[in-house]
Image 1 (cartoon, one colour):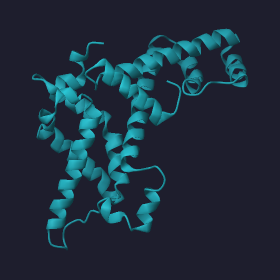
Image 2 (cartoon, helix red, strand yellow; image 1 turned 60 degrees about the vertical axis):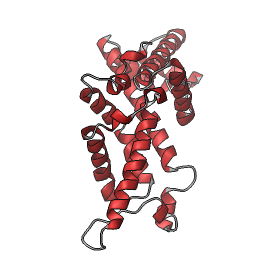
Image 3 (cartoon, one colour; image 1 turned 180 degrees about the horizontal axis):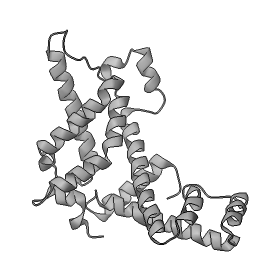
Length: 232
């Protein structure tokens, strides 16, 4: 792995960083939306807040304050998001009531029954961010895998086998798909094994784009497994 050429490394160093930064921000849009939503903000303000955050992050080059030694873009972005929301709340609460849009912070919603329903159980804002990040990254890797299958002329097989990439199939599943594809059970099992292996490679490649060392990459892989609770 050449970590010096990852997207995050490009952002941290001089050069054409805007394109790499915009790509990272697009990738992290779903986790940011989920974090803001689970902080208890009104539904009609979530999208606007996310858009404002990314606009400021890019326009004001907040990444310039990042410490390369701290590595992961995900952690840096989440910290920046928390600070952005704190600053937003402070600005809005400093205004006189009336006329301005009112946002509710996480602390303010602690005694609101309707909001507590959204924050119940283990769906804290941080956990919502983590799970959304994991799901988004997996979806990105799956899209890349599907594109590869299509280019190899094996799209029909991929569409039949993709359900087996996250959960191990049982014999009934193998029999059903083997009949559809007119393949032997062993041939099908080999195909599933290869697709799962390639998916892991693509996931590692995606994670390597936002880490700066092998140790950080392995830590992100473990975090992904924990968030998804699936085979990786």
